[in-house]
Image 1 (tube, rainbow, N blue to C red):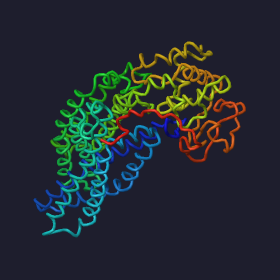
Image 2: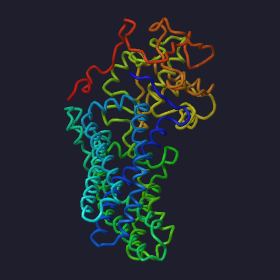
Image 3: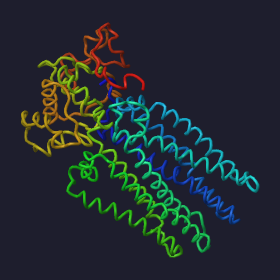
Image 4: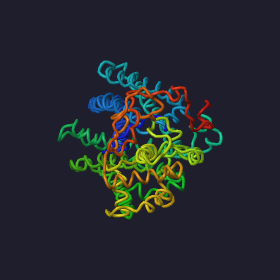
Length: 510
Protein backbone atom coordinates (compact mmCIF):
# COMPACT_ATOMS: atom_id res chain seq x y z
CA UNK A 1 0.00 0.00 0.00
CA UNK A 2 2.90 2.34 0.62
CA UNK A 3 4.86 1.48 -2.53
CA UNK A 4 4.32 1.54 -6.30
CA UNK A 5 3.57 -2.06 -7.23
CA UNK A 6 5.74 -3.93 -9.70
CA UNK A 7 3.68 -6.57 -11.46
CA UNK A 8 4.26 -9.18 -14.18
CA UNK A 9 0.81 -10.09 -15.39
CA UNK A 10 1.89 -12.93 -17.68
CA UNK A 11 4.03 -15.11 -15.39
CA UNK A 12 3.38 -13.44 -12.03
CA UNK A 13 5.78 -11.98 -9.51
CA UNK A 14 6.23 -15.27 -7.67
CA UNK A 15 7.76 -17.02 -10.67
CA UNK A 16 10.37 -14.29 -11.06
CA UNK A 17 11.36 -14.55 -7.41
CA UNK A 18 11.17 -18.35 -7.28
CA UNK A 19 13.52 -18.90 -10.24
CA UNK A 20 16.16 -16.55 -8.84
CA UNK A 21 15.87 -17.72 -5.24
CA UNK A 22 15.85 -21.46 -5.95
CA UNK A 23 18.83 -21.19 -8.30
CA UNK A 24 20.71 -19.30 -5.59
CA UNK A 25 19.81 -21.88 -2.93
CA UNK A 26 21.01 -24.75 -5.11
CA UNK A 27 24.34 -23.01 -5.68
CA UNK A 28 24.74 -21.87 -2.09
CA UNK A 29 23.89 -25.21 -0.50
CA UNK A 30 25.55 -27.64 -2.90
CA UNK A 31 28.54 -25.65 -4.20
CA UNK A 32 29.40 -23.55 -1.15
CA UNK A 33 28.02 -24.73 2.20
CA UNK A 34 28.38 -28.42 1.32
CA UNK A 35 31.14 -28.56 -1.29
CA UNK A 36 33.83 -26.48 0.44
CA UNK A 37 34.10 -28.79 3.50
CA UNK A 38 34.19 -31.78 1.15
CA UNK A 39 36.94 -30.21 -0.96
CA UNK A 40 38.92 -29.29 2.16
CA UNK A 41 38.60 -32.85 3.47
CA UNK A 42 39.74 -34.18 0.11
CA UNK A 43 42.76 -31.85 0.13
CA UNK A 44 43.64 -32.89 3.69
CA UNK A 45 43.33 -36.57 2.78
CA UNK A 46 45.65 -36.08 -0.18
CA UNK A 47 48.27 -34.45 2.04
CA UNK A 48 47.95 -37.13 4.70
CA UNK A 49 48.25 -40.04 2.26
CA UNK A 50 50.82 -38.30 0.07
CA UNK A 51 48.71 -38.93 -3.05
CA UNK A 52 48.59 -36.01 -5.48
CA UNK A 53 45.50 -37.43 -7.24
CA UNK A 54 43.30 -36.28 -4.35
CA UNK A 55 44.79 -32.81 -4.50
CA UNK A 56 44.19 -32.55 -8.27
CA UNK A 57 40.60 -33.79 -7.97
CA UNK A 58 39.87 -31.39 -5.11
CA UNK A 59 41.30 -28.49 -7.10
CA UNK A 60 39.22 -29.29 -10.19
CA UNK A 61 36.02 -29.54 -8.16
CA UNK A 62 36.91 -26.27 -6.45
CA UNK A 63 37.45 -24.62 -9.84
CA UNK A 64 33.87 -25.46 -10.84
CA UNK A 65 32.50 -24.23 -7.51
CA UNK A 66 34.61 -21.06 -7.66
CA UNK A 67 33.42 -20.11 -11.15
CA UNK A 68 29.75 -20.84 -10.49
CA UNK A 69 29.50 -19.30 -7.01
CA UNK A 70 31.34 -16.09 -7.91
CA UNK A 71 29.28 -15.56 -11.08
CA UNK A 72 25.79 -17.08 -11.06
CA UNK A 73 25.75 -17.40 -7.27
CA UNK A 74 26.71 -13.77 -6.76
CA UNK A 75 24.25 -12.51 -9.38
CA UNK A 76 21.33 -14.49 -7.99
CA UNK A 77 22.22 -13.35 -4.46
CA UNK A 78 21.85 -9.74 -5.53
CA UNK A 79 18.85 -10.76 -7.64
CA UNK A 80 17.03 -12.03 -4.54
CA UNK A 81 17.22 -8.56 -3.03
CA UNK A 82 15.90 -6.89 -6.16
CA UNK A 83 13.16 -9.44 -6.84
CA UNK A 84 12.02 -9.57 -3.18
CA UNK A 85 11.86 -5.78 -3.05
CA UNK A 86 9.78 -5.75 -6.21
CA UNK A 87 7.53 -8.69 -5.35
CA UNK A 88 6.64 -7.61 -1.81
CA UNK A 89 8.32 -4.38 -0.68
CA UNK A 90 6.28 -4.19 2.53
CA UNK A 91 7.51 -7.60 3.65
CA UNK A 92 11.16 -7.03 2.85
CA UNK A 93 10.99 -3.61 4.51
CA UNK A 94 9.62 -5.14 7.71
CA UNK A 95 12.26 -7.88 7.70
CA UNK A 96 15.05 -5.34 7.27
CA UNK A 97 13.81 -3.47 10.33
CA UNK A 98 13.77 -6.62 12.44
CA UNK A 99 16.97 -8.19 11.12
CA UNK A 100 19.08 -5.17 10.19
CA UNK A 101 22.04 -6.23 12.32
CA UNK A 102 21.73 -9.85 11.23
CA UNK A 103 21.93 -8.81 7.59
CA UNK A 104 24.78 -6.44 8.40
CA UNK A 105 26.67 -9.32 10.04
CA UNK A 106 25.85 -11.58 7.08
CA UNK A 107 27.25 -8.96 4.70
CA UNK A 108 30.52 -8.91 6.65
CA UNK A 109 30.63 -12.71 6.60
CA UNK A 110 29.88 -12.74 2.88
CA UNK A 111 32.69 -10.30 2.11
CA UNK A 112 35.01 -12.48 4.16
CA UNK A 113 33.75 -15.57 2.34
CA UNK A 114 34.41 -14.04 -1.07
CA UNK A 115 37.91 -13.01 -0.01
CA UNK A 116 38.63 -16.47 1.36
CA UNK A 117 37.40 -18.37 -1.70
CA UNK A 118 39.54 -16.19 -3.95
CA UNK A 119 42.56 -16.76 -1.71
CA UNK A 120 41.82 -20.49 -1.40
CA UNK A 121 41.51 -21.00 -5.16
CA UNK A 122 44.28 -18.67 -6.33
CA UNK A 123 46.91 -19.92 -3.86
CA UNK A 124 46.21 -23.62 -4.34
CA UNK A 125 49.21 -24.28 -6.59
CA UNK A 126 51.61 -21.98 -4.79
CA UNK A 127 50.90 -22.94 -1.16
CA UNK A 128 52.47 -26.39 -1.28
CA UNK A 129 54.90 -28.32 0.85
CA UNK A 130 55.35 -26.63 4.23
CA UNK A 131 52.60 -24.14 3.42
CA UNK A 132 50.01 -26.82 2.65
CA UNK A 133 48.62 -26.96 6.22
CA UNK A 134 48.04 -23.19 6.08
CA UNK A 135 46.18 -23.64 2.80
CA UNK A 136 44.01 -26.33 4.34
CA UNK A 137 43.35 -23.85 7.15
CA UNK A 138 42.01 -21.44 4.51
CA UNK A 139 39.60 -24.17 3.45
CA UNK A 140 38.44 -24.69 7.02
CA UNK A 141 37.89 -20.95 7.50
CA UNK A 142 36.03 -20.75 4.19
CA UNK A 143 33.83 -23.68 5.22
CA UNK A 144 32.88 -21.88 8.42
CA UNK A 145 32.11 -18.61 6.64
CA UNK A 146 30.02 -20.39 4.00
CA UNK A 147 27.97 -22.07 6.71
CA UNK A 148 27.56 -18.84 8.67
CA UNK A 149 25.98 -17.06 5.70
CA UNK A 150 23.35 -19.80 5.54
CA UNK A 151 22.92 -19.81 9.32
CA UNK A 152 22.02 -16.12 9.37
CA UNK A 153 19.56 -16.32 6.47
CA UNK A 154 17.87 -19.42 7.91
CA UNK A 155 16.98 -17.41 11.02
CA UNK A 156 15.06 -14.99 8.79
CA UNK A 157 13.40 -17.80 6.83
CA UNK A 158 12.30 -19.41 10.09
CA UNK A 159 10.89 -16.11 11.33
CA UNK A 160 8.82 -15.79 8.16
CA UNK A 161 7.17 -19.11 8.98
CA UNK A 162 6.71 -18.68 12.73
CA UNK A 163 7.43 -15.43 14.54
CA UNK A 164 7.16 -17.18 17.91
CA UNK A 165 6.90 -14.76 20.83
CA UNK A 166 8.22 -11.81 18.81
CA UNK A 167 4.78 -10.17 18.28
CA UNK A 168 4.31 -9.92 22.05
CA UNK A 169 7.86 -8.63 22.66
CA UNK A 170 9.42 -7.51 19.36
CA UNK A 171 13.14 -7.74 20.06
CA UNK A 172 15.97 -8.75 17.77
CA UNK A 173 16.88 -11.94 19.58
CA UNK A 174 13.28 -13.12 19.85
CA UNK A 175 13.12 -12.75 16.10
CA UNK A 176 16.36 -14.67 15.55
CA UNK A 177 15.58 -17.45 18.02
CA UNK A 178 12.20 -18.26 16.53
CA UNK A 179 10.80 -21.79 17.01
CA UNK A 180 11.77 -22.97 13.51
CA UNK A 181 15.31 -21.56 13.31
CA UNK A 182 17.39 -24.34 14.91
CA UNK A 183 15.37 -27.29 13.49
CA UNK A 184 15.55 -25.82 9.99
CA UNK A 185 19.28 -25.19 10.34
CA UNK A 186 19.80 -28.75 11.57
CA UNK A 187 17.95 -29.98 8.47
CA UNK A 188 19.56 -27.69 5.91
CA UNK A 189 23.15 -28.26 7.03
CA UNK A 190 23.31 -32.02 6.33
CA UNK A 191 21.01 -31.48 3.34
CA UNK A 192 23.64 -29.20 1.83
CA UNK A 193 26.31 -31.82 2.50
CA UNK A 194 24.24 -34.51 0.76
CA UNK A 195 23.70 -32.26 -2.28
CA UNK A 196 27.42 -31.50 -2.41
CA UNK A 197 28.30 -35.18 -2.27
CA UNK A 198 25.94 -35.95 -5.14
CA UNK A 199 27.43 -33.08 -7.16
CA UNK A 200 31.01 -34.17 -6.40
CA UNK A 201 30.18 -37.75 -7.39
CA UNK A 202 29.25 -36.56 -10.87
CA UNK A 203 32.36 -34.39 -11.20
CA UNK A 204 34.61 -37.17 -9.94
CA UNK A 205 33.59 -39.27 -12.92
CA UNK A 206 34.54 -36.54 -15.40
CA UNK A 207 37.75 -35.55 -13.63
CA UNK A 208 39.21 -39.08 -13.41
CA UNK A 209 40.26 -41.50 -16.14
CA UNK A 210 38.45 -44.67 -17.09
CA UNK A 211 40.27 -47.77 -15.95
CA UNK A 212 42.20 -45.79 -13.40
CA UNK A 213 41.90 -47.31 -9.96
CA UNK A 214 41.64 -43.81 -8.52
CA UNK A 215 38.20 -43.31 -10.13
CA UNK A 216 36.77 -46.10 -7.99
CA UNK A 217 38.36 -44.57 -4.89
CA UNK A 218 36.92 -41.11 -5.71
CA UNK A 219 33.47 -42.59 -6.29
CA UNK A 220 33.66 -44.46 -2.98
CA UNK A 221 34.88 -41.35 -1.14
CA UNK A 222 32.12 -39.04 -2.41
CA UNK A 223 29.45 -41.73 -1.99
CA UNK A 224 30.54 -42.33 1.60
CA UNK A 225 30.38 -38.58 2.27
CA UNK A 226 26.80 -38.48 0.94
CA UNK A 227 25.72 -41.59 2.78
CA UNK A 228 27.20 -40.40 6.05
CA UNK A 229 25.13 -37.24 6.09
CA UNK A 230 21.81 -38.90 5.17
CA UNK A 231 20.83 -40.00 8.72
CA UNK A 232 21.48 -36.51 10.07
CA UNK A 233 19.44 -35.03 7.23
CA UNK A 234 16.56 -37.40 7.96
CA UNK A 235 16.68 -36.58 11.68
CA UNK A 236 16.74 -32.85 10.89
CA UNK A 237 13.77 -33.25 8.53
CA UNK A 238 11.78 -35.04 11.24
CA UNK A 239 12.56 -32.33 13.80
CA UNK A 240 11.76 -29.59 11.30
CA UNK A 241 8.39 -31.14 10.49
CA UNK A 242 7.55 -31.47 14.18
CA UNK A 243 7.88 -27.70 14.78
CA UNK A 244 5.97 -26.53 11.70
CA UNK A 245 2.78 -24.83 12.98
CA UNK A 246 -0.32 -27.00 12.72
CA UNK A 247 -2.13 -24.48 10.53
CA UNK A 248 0.66 -24.70 7.96
CA UNK A 249 0.41 -28.46 7.95
CA UNK A 250 -3.08 -28.07 6.49
CA UNK A 251 -1.51 -26.44 3.41
CA UNK A 252 0.88 -29.29 2.66
CA UNK A 253 -1.46 -31.13 0.29
CA UNK A 254 -1.79 -28.09 -1.99
CA UNK A 255 1.89 -27.20 -1.53
CA UNK A 256 2.99 -30.64 -2.72
CA UNK A 257 0.84 -30.45 -5.83
CA UNK A 258 -1.56 -27.62 -6.70
CA UNK A 259 -5.25 -27.04 -6.11
CA UNK A 260 -6.01 -28.90 -9.33
CA UNK A 261 -4.06 -32.01 -8.26
CA UNK A 262 -4.52 -31.82 -4.51
CA UNK A 263 -5.93 -35.35 -4.41
CA UNK A 264 -2.56 -36.64 -5.65
CA UNK A 265 -0.59 -35.28 -2.70
CA UNK A 266 -0.04 -38.71 -1.14
CA UNK A 267 1.32 -40.06 -4.41
CA UNK A 268 3.66 -37.09 -4.69
CA UNK A 269 4.76 -37.64 -1.10
CA UNK A 270 5.62 -41.27 -1.89
CA UNK A 271 7.55 -40.15 -4.98
CA UNK A 272 9.58 -37.77 -2.82
CA UNK A 273 10.40 -40.57 -0.38
CA UNK A 274 11.24 -42.87 -3.30
CA UNK A 275 13.58 -40.25 -4.77
CA UNK A 276 15.38 -39.93 -1.46
CA UNK A 277 15.57 -43.72 -1.31
CA UNK A 278 17.12 -43.93 -4.78
CA UNK A 279 19.73 -41.35 -3.78
CA UNK A 280 20.63 -43.44 -0.73
CA UNK A 281 20.79 -46.67 -2.75
CA UNK A 282 23.08 -45.17 -5.38
CA UNK A 283 25.36 -43.83 -2.65
CA UNK A 284 25.40 -47.26 -1.02
CA UNK A 285 26.22 -48.80 -4.39
CA UNK A 286 29.07 -46.32 -4.82
CA UNK A 287 30.52 -47.31 -1.44
CA UNK A 288 30.25 -51.08 -1.87
CA UNK A 289 30.86 -51.54 -5.61
CA UNK A 290 32.22 -48.30 -7.10
CA UNK A 291 33.62 -49.97 -10.25
CA UNK A 292 30.18 -51.30 -11.19
CA UNK A 293 28.37 -48.00 -10.87
CA UNK A 294 26.97 -47.09 -14.36
CA UNK A 295 27.07 -43.58 -15.79
CA UNK A 296 23.35 -43.00 -15.35
CA UNK A 297 23.71 -43.79 -11.66
CA UNK A 298 26.33 -41.04 -11.40
CA UNK A 299 23.94 -38.45 -12.84
CA UNK A 300 20.88 -39.58 -10.91
CA UNK A 301 21.91 -38.51 -7.38
CA UNK A 302 22.66 -34.90 -8.28
CA UNK A 303 19.43 -34.59 -10.26
CA UNK A 304 17.41 -36.05 -7.39
CA UNK A 305 19.21 -33.97 -4.75
CA UNK A 306 18.63 -30.76 -6.67
CA UNK A 307 15.01 -31.70 -7.41
CA UNK A 308 14.31 -32.47 -3.75
CA UNK A 309 15.91 -29.21 -2.64
CA UNK A 310 13.87 -27.30 -5.21
CA UNK A 311 10.67 -28.98 -4.11
CA UNK A 312 11.43 -28.30 -0.48
CA UNK A 313 11.75 -24.59 -1.21
CA UNK A 314 8.41 -24.55 -3.03
CA UNK A 315 6.64 -26.32 -0.19
CA UNK A 316 8.28 -24.11 2.46
CA UNK A 317 7.22 -20.96 0.63
CA UNK A 318 3.64 -22.15 0.18
CA UNK A 319 2.79 -23.64 3.57
CA UNK A 320 3.23 -20.35 5.43
CA UNK A 321 0.32 -18.83 3.52
CA UNK A 322 -1.81 -16.81 3.99
CA UNK A 323 1.15 -15.04 5.59
CA UNK A 324 4.39 -13.79 4.13
CA UNK A 325 5.57 -13.21 7.73
CA UNK A 326 3.86 -15.58 10.12
CA UNK A 327 0.98 -13.99 12.09
CA UNK A 328 2.36 -10.54 11.30
CA UNK A 329 1.80 -9.81 7.61
CA UNK A 330 -0.41 -11.41 5.00
CA UNK A 331 0.93 -12.36 1.58
CA UNK A 332 -0.70 -9.22 0.14
CA UNK A 333 1.64 -7.08 2.25
CA UNK A 334 -1.10 -5.95 4.66
CA UNK A 335 -0.93 -6.64 8.38
CA UNK A 336 -3.89 -8.40 10.06
CA UNK A 337 -3.72 -5.70 12.75
CA UNK A 338 -4.65 -3.11 10.10
CA UNK A 339 -7.71 -4.94 8.78
CA UNK A 340 -10.21 -3.37 11.24
CA UNK A 341 -9.05 0.12 10.29
CA UNK A 342 -9.20 -0.69 6.58
CA UNK A 343 -12.70 -2.14 7.00
CA UNK A 344 -13.79 1.22 8.38
CA UNK A 345 -11.80 3.73 6.33
CA UNK A 346 -11.08 1.67 3.24
CA UNK A 347 -7.91 0.43 1.60
CA UNK A 348 -7.89 3.15 -1.04
CA UNK A 349 -8.07 5.91 1.54
CA UNK A 350 -4.77 4.72 3.02
CA UNK A 351 -2.99 3.62 -0.15
CA UNK A 352 -0.16 5.93 -1.21
CA UNK A 353 -0.29 5.18 -4.92
CA UNK A 354 -3.82 4.71 -6.24
CA UNK A 355 -5.86 6.52 -8.91
CA UNK A 356 -8.95 6.51 -6.69
CA UNK A 357 -9.66 7.53 -3.11
CA UNK A 358 -13.46 7.72 -3.08
CA UNK A 359 -15.55 5.24 -5.09
CA UNK A 360 -18.24 6.61 -7.38
CA UNK A 361 -20.35 5.07 -10.14
CA UNK A 362 -18.01 6.66 -12.67
CA UNK A 363 -14.80 5.19 -11.27
CA UNK A 364 -15.94 1.80 -9.96
CA UNK A 365 -13.82 -0.17 -12.43
CA UNK A 366 -10.77 1.95 -11.73
CA UNK A 367 -11.36 1.44 -8.00
CA UNK A 368 -11.78 -2.31 -8.51
CA UNK A 369 -8.62 -2.45 -10.55
CA UNK A 370 -6.75 -0.56 -7.78
CA UNK A 371 -8.13 -2.98 -5.19
CA UNK A 372 -7.02 -5.95 -7.25
CA UNK A 373 -3.59 -4.41 -7.68
CA UNK A 374 -3.17 -3.83 -3.94
CA UNK A 375 -4.88 -6.90 -2.49
CA UNK A 376 -4.32 -9.63 -5.10
CA UNK A 377 -1.33 -9.11 -7.40
CA UNK A 378 1.33 -10.28 -4.94
CA UNK A 379 0.13 -13.80 -5.79
CA UNK A 380 -2.27 -13.55 -8.74
CA UNK A 381 -2.40 -12.28 -12.31
CA UNK A 382 -5.49 -11.44 -14.33
CA UNK A 383 -5.20 -13.99 -17.14
CA UNK A 384 -1.63 -15.30 -16.79
CA UNK A 385 -0.05 -17.80 -14.38
CA UNK A 386 -2.32 -18.27 -11.35
CA UNK A 387 -4.80 -15.95 -13.08
CA UNK A 388 -8.06 -15.06 -11.38
CA UNK A 389 -10.10 -15.40 -14.58
CA UNK A 390 -9.05 -19.06 -14.86
CA UNK A 391 -9.69 -19.64 -11.15
CA UNK A 392 -13.20 -18.21 -11.29
CA UNK A 393 -13.95 -19.97 -14.58
CA UNK A 394 -13.06 -23.29 -12.94
CA UNK A 395 -15.51 -22.46 -10.15
CA UNK A 396 -18.41 -20.90 -12.06
CA UNK A 397 -17.98 -21.91 -15.70
CA UNK A 398 -17.82 -19.83 -18.87
CA UNK A 399 -21.33 -18.40 -18.69
CA UNK A 400 -21.55 -14.85 -17.27
CA UNK A 401 -20.80 -15.00 -13.57
CA UNK A 402 -23.46 -13.89 -11.10
CA UNK A 403 -22.36 -10.79 -9.27
CA UNK A 404 -23.76 -11.87 -5.90
CA UNK A 405 -22.05 -15.26 -6.13
CA UNK A 406 -18.62 -13.82 -6.93
CA UNK A 407 -18.92 -11.17 -4.24
CA UNK A 408 -19.99 -13.78 -1.70
CA UNK A 409 -17.04 -15.96 -2.65
CA UNK A 410 -14.59 -13.09 -2.20
CA UNK A 411 -16.06 -12.32 1.20
CA UNK A 412 -15.65 -15.86 2.55
CA UNK A 413 -12.99 -17.58 0.41
CA UNK A 414 -10.38 -17.51 3.19
CA UNK A 415 -12.61 -19.84 5.21
CA UNK A 416 -12.54 -22.61 2.62
CA UNK A 417 -9.07 -21.82 1.28
CA UNK A 418 -6.93 -21.20 4.37
CA UNK A 419 -3.92 -20.24 2.25
CA UNK A 420 -5.79 -17.14 1.06
CA UNK A 421 -5.84 -13.95 3.16
CA UNK A 422 -9.20 -12.21 3.66
CA UNK A 423 -10.05 -9.45 1.23
CA UNK A 424 -9.31 -6.16 3.02
CA UNK A 425 -11.39 -2.98 2.84
CA UNK A 426 -14.97 -1.80 2.94
CA UNK A 427 -18.09 -3.31 1.41
CA UNK A 428 -17.94 -0.67 -1.33
CA UNK A 429 -14.37 -1.69 -2.18
CA UNK A 430 -15.36 -5.36 -2.21
CA UNK A 431 -18.18 -4.52 -4.60
CA UNK A 432 -15.80 -2.56 -6.85
CA UNK A 433 -13.36 -5.48 -6.89
CA UNK A 434 -16.22 -7.77 -7.86
CA UNK A 435 -17.19 -5.46 -10.74
CA UNK A 436 -13.59 -5.45 -11.95
CA UNK A 437 -13.45 -9.26 -11.97
CA UNK A 438 -16.75 -9.47 -13.86
CA UNK A 439 -15.40 -7.00 -16.40
CA UNK A 440 -12.28 -9.14 -16.79
CA UNK A 441 -14.49 -12.06 -17.79
CA UNK A 442 -16.23 -9.93 -20.41
CA UNK A 443 -13.14 -8.11 -21.57
CA UNK A 444 -9.88 -9.80 -20.48
CA UNK A 445 -6.98 -7.36 -20.28
CA UNK A 446 -3.48 -7.52 -18.94
CA UNK A 447 -2.82 -5.48 -15.82
CA UNK A 448 0.40 -3.49 -16.29
CA UNK A 449 2.61 -2.81 -13.30
CA UNK A 450 4.12 0.46 -12.16
CA UNK A 451 7.29 -0.41 -14.07
CA UNK A 452 5.28 -0.10 -17.31
CA UNK A 453 2.77 2.70 -16.71
CA UNK A 454 4.34 4.68 -13.89
CA UNK A 455 2.77 5.35 -10.51
CA UNK A 456 -0.76 6.64 -10.07
CA UNK A 457 -2.24 9.17 -7.69
CA UNK A 458 -5.68 10.80 -7.71
CA UNK A 459 -6.01 13.80 -10.01
CA UNK A 460 -6.60 16.31 -7.22
CA UNK A 461 -3.27 15.42 -5.56
CA UNK A 462 -1.16 16.47 -8.55
CA UNK A 463 -3.16 19.04 -10.54
CA UNK A 464 -0.17 20.13 -12.62
CA UNK A 465 0.60 16.68 -14.00
CA UNK A 466 -0.65 15.48 -17.35
CA UNK A 467 -3.85 13.39 -17.55
CA UNK A 468 -4.07 9.89 -18.90
CA UNK A 469 -6.63 9.10 -21.56
CA UNK A 470 -9.15 6.74 -19.98
CA UNK A 471 -11.67 6.38 -22.79
CA UNK A 472 -12.98 2.84 -22.96
CA UNK A 473 -10.28 1.42 -20.69
CA UNK A 474 -11.33 -0.54 -17.63
CA UNK A 475 -7.91 0.24 -16.10
CA UNK A 476 -8.72 3.93 -15.59
CA UNK A 477 -11.50 5.89 -13.99
CA UNK A 478 -13.45 8.80 -15.40
CA UNK A 479 -11.00 11.48 -16.49
CA UNK A 480 -8.14 9.06 -15.81
CA UNK A 481 -5.60 8.96 -13.02
CA UNK A 482 -2.49 11.06 -13.07
CA UNK A 483 0.56 9.07 -14.12
CA UNK A 484 3.89 10.13 -12.69
CA UNK A 485 7.30 9.32 -14.05
CA UNK A 486 8.70 9.10 -10.52
CA UNK A 487 7.26 8.48 -7.04
CA UNK A 488 5.83 11.41 -5.13
CA UNK A 489 6.01 12.02 -1.41
CA UNK A 490 2.61 11.51 0.23
CA UNK A 491 1.30 14.83 1.37
CA UNK A 492 3.74 16.84 -0.82
CA UNK A 493 0.82 18.91 -2.06
CA UNK A 494 0.17 20.16 1.47
CA UNK A 495 -2.43 17.49 2.22
CA UNK A 496 -1.24 14.61 4.35
CA UNK A 497 -2.83 11.24 3.62
CA UNK A 498 -3.74 9.08 6.61
CA UNK A 499 -1.23 6.30 7.16
CA UNK A 500 -1.82 2.75 8.27
CA UNK A 501 0.11 1.06 11.04
CA UNK A 502 1.09 3.88 13.38
CA UNK A 503 0.91 1.30 16.18
CA UNK A 504 3.25 -1.06 14.32
CA UNK A 505 5.98 -2.42 16.62
CA UNK A 506 8.37 -2.01 13.71
CA UNK A 507 7.84 1.73 13.72
CA UNK A 508 10.51 2.09 16.39
CA UNK A 509 13.79 0.19 16.68
CA UNK A 510 14.10 -2.66 19.15
